[in-house]
Length: 341
Ligand code: PLP
Ligand code: COI
Image 1: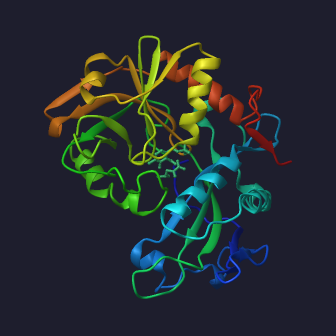
Image 2: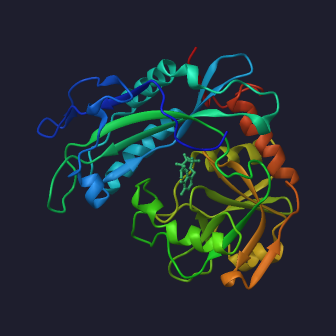
């Protein structure tokens, strides 16, 4: 199964925000997926000016046939931080968690079955979003619509849990200091189209972004965070206003120190250091899970470095630990899982 959109039975919508009272007036509704009330208006600030933010989470059908969500509250909190970044009213975290849980249960028939082989497992991707109301002048959205839908998915990259070939982008910038790189707003994703097409022209799957001022330090990939292992140390760029604070990133850092005994460093890392010294590199995120990066091309394709020909030992261990917790194969010592039924 690929990572793509498949219509399911129910979608959640809440259009009840009252800008005068500054609160959501009701609990919203679950509608059949083709209900016209789910449509986004052509004059929406979101459609016209990018006043839209979103989240990504997954529901897993565990080994014990129970439905699990992973750190869903963190998605609700990040949505609220993204909302602050574009001055949009946010959606209350407790209501977010409650409605996402109900949405998953209503669509539970679409959660892919548990597969003993981790590489064959699929999940139900959850996409909550807040999108601006109709308007004309450039303005903040003061009465956004909250929508959440789901879709069964497989691996984000066609390579799945196999090494992919990534291309460093030198001539474009994803996010600048003082900008919105840490917000999960649609605008950050459309930025990557030209870069991905450049990467594809060089036979690569994904773009690796560098910092916008010195073009020297690795930031992240278009759809996930970046990590690399050098010896016994796992390194990932420190969070800033140019990097999305990944929930998977945060979880992996904990698993790496507490379960694998690795040293962890959140610090600036140059492309040069990665090309010279990395023993393993991978991207990590909800959709990407852990996606090993086997080869990195840089300098417009003039340099290609093979980091590893197969999946690295630490990438494999982290993948097994993380997906093990998500599918109920491993215990959940950190209370990351909510079991729905
Ligand atoms: N960075 C970007 C640009 C992303 O789109 C994502 C995916 O959501 C991530 C990082 C990883 O975030 P998370 O682990 O919360 O999914
Ligand atoms: C996610 O991993 O949930 C994301 O939002 C990335 C997206 C590009 C699919």
